[in-house]
Amino acid sequence: MLKIRLRRMGATNRAFYRLVVSDSRLATRGSAVEEVGYYDPRKNPPVIQIDKDRIDYWVAQGARLSDTVKQLVARSAAS
Image 1 (cartoon, rainbow, N blue to C red):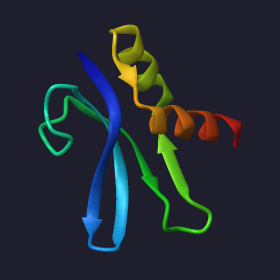
Image 2 (image 1 turned 180 degrees about the vertical axis):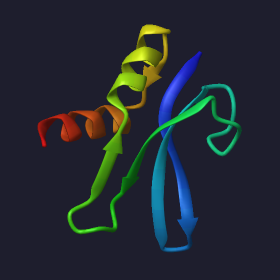
Image 3 (image 1 turned 120 degrees about the vertical axis):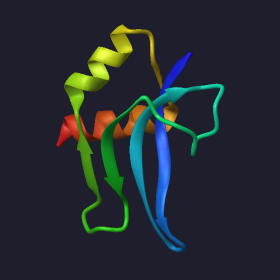
Image 4 (image 1 turned 30 degrees about the vertical axis):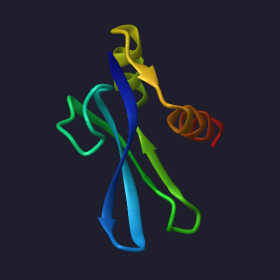
């Protein structure tokens, strides 16, 4: 099953995250099918860049959003 989830990137204490589509059976740092967004909580205000069309496409293909990604998508839609 495919999941849309966060992949941690960056150096120690300087984390940012990429929203990736990947197989739920593989490790988070494993290979991703596609990168569909970016989240940087360290900026003020936090930067959320999401490709909504690609997320809609992958959800139509059966991918599930992680709980955190659901919150980020809702937050980006509100702003």
